[in-house]
Image (tube, rainbow, N blue to C red; front, side):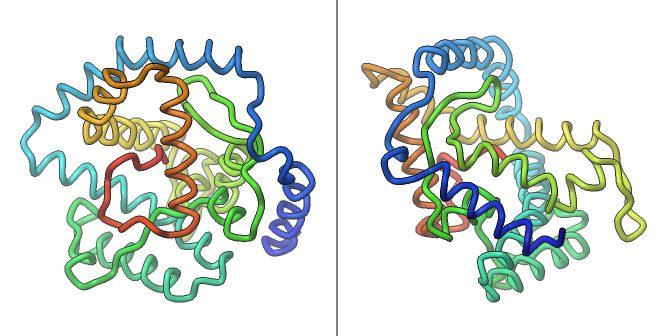
Amino acid sequence: MNIKKYFILLIFTFSLLTGNSFAESECFEKASRATFKFNMAFDKAILKPISKAYNKLPEPIKEGTGNFTSNVATLLSIPNYALQGNVKGTLDATASFLINSSIGILGFGNPAAALGFESQKEDVGQTLGSYGVKSGCYFVLPILGPTTVRDSIGIIADTFIDPFSMVTLKEKELLGISGSKLDYYSVKGATAIDFRGDNMANFDNLEKNSIDVYSSMKSVYLQDRENKIKNSKKSDEKNWEELD
């Protein structure tokens, strides 16, 4: 089955699963709250301390790490822009990746931005949303955090169209390039730490000022995803970016 037929099938399936009456509901709230509590404990014990140490690194190292992980994420944006029929986005993301991977030394630099080639991070969940597929009910996954029916299946679908996932997670050779699962999880871990470090104050303020942190995080996540589907966020806005 080619990618176009696969995507049409995905859209049809999610249209059935995520109708309007389902869009505002929540799956397994008690279980999700328990999972959220576990995630908060994991963050407090592991992710937050590592991110605090990361924030103490010299700024060029932090900036280079952020540039590198963003450049890798661009590989997923390219096919999603194409699936959305966004020709400019596809060309800009492709140009950004090629320029940063070469002149930017594997993406640690970001000369593409100076040349005007910037793109938002796109994934299958956003692409389905651009086709009008509703989010479906909300729930929380261990470690991965907040998601919806549409976005959780989108995470799985991403691995089938993301070149980086193909050569690392699936360990397939692509254009003479190969990798390993360790490469995949190392980059994803670095992405999570970079995100957590950038949003240290945001998370602290959310915990401090929220009567119900779970509900506040749910609201932040759903609003963030809606903004990204509408492409209403600037590409350089790092606040509350999702973990890729």
